[in-house]
Length: 138
Image 1 (cartoon, rainbow, N blue to C red):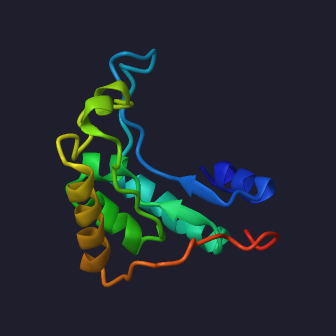
Image 2 (tube, one colour):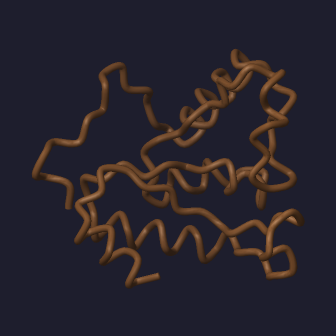
């Protein structure tokens, strides 16, 4: 994982998602053990220290393994949360792992839920684009 963080530094990434691996029965990795929230949060915190200007998402996978996973991620270095704005009729076509929370939420409910999560950890919602300054990513 430390090597992955160094790779992100070397690549100059602007944004990354760090979250637990969740096996999907429709893949060759179906029988592999899933990742843990604890290791994901520690990795996220280390990545934040190494890459202070990179955007890190509080992934839905964090919420899949713990009901407050994204809130915990925001406390450990994540600074982006992405509500699910996919129209309901298309969501079955994008099931990358089982147990993803909020699949029945409307886009409005997902957006409101994201705001509640951010505010629950005493963070604010930015109104600008949130671009990472070029040349200042790591």
